[in-house]
Length: 197
Image 1 (cartoon, one colour):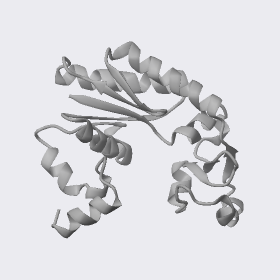
Image 2 (spheres, helix red, strand yellow; image 1 turned 90 degrees about the horizontal axis):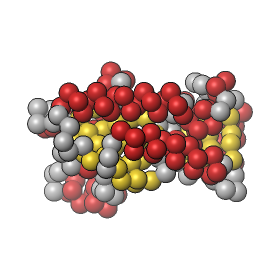
Image 3 (tube, helix red, strand yellow; image 1 turned 135 degrees about the vertical axis):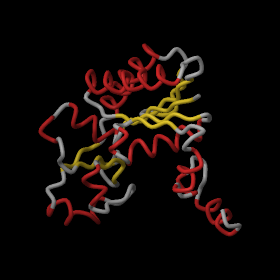
Image 4 (tube, one colour; image 1 turned 120 degrees about the vertical axis):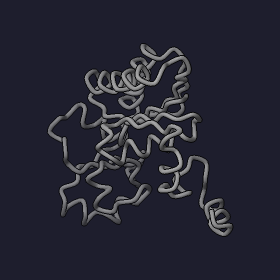
């Protein structure tokens, strides 16, 4: 089994970790030259702001909804990433850092109950020691783990952890759009839709 831990709205969450007054407030983080949106809190996503959107195009939304705007702080984000990865590595012997806010976990050797307890424990430790919320997906392959992570992130009833197994795999995959599958780009999505996938 594989898992993936993904920090939720990573750059925005890092800013919140050092200013708790920003909790539940709309936040965006802008690119190096403050030109485009590169991170959004859930509150901003709900307003329809897209990744890569030029900041000047949403200036009226920023004013209307009092969106907090931050310039990138890669020193902070790098430090917070290292803290998260250290916490993960303390509990899981084999990890593969995939990006600044994601890591794959090799979960072979864990039985089902131990696995669920372990990842819930890691999630709580990360929140306690960094203030960052994370989602954890588990599956037989890295692709299934990514899909499980999407489910964990989007559905609050799973409390940030979801596992795709033999019992629920077909049910979950029937409800996941093909474009949400890791590695499927726009052209591949069109190709697959053409053939009824």
